[in-house]
Image (tube, rainbow, N blue to C red; front, top):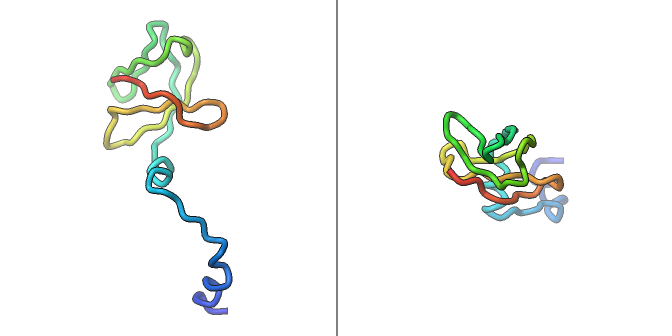
Length: 85
């Protein structure tokens, strides 16, 4: 089967993603432990996180070009709150 024929037969299996979903897929991932003053440090930049995460290790996602926004990942792998720089 040629590539074109294969594409035509499986065309209904192709799933299109929104721009937002694609951007989320390329976010960098990092884990940090939250200090007692509710802060974390990433590349010498200090961020505040919600108080409920004190002394816990949290998973974060961020755009490497724009570190003004960090997103905390919950146990269901969903983006939660933003951390404040």
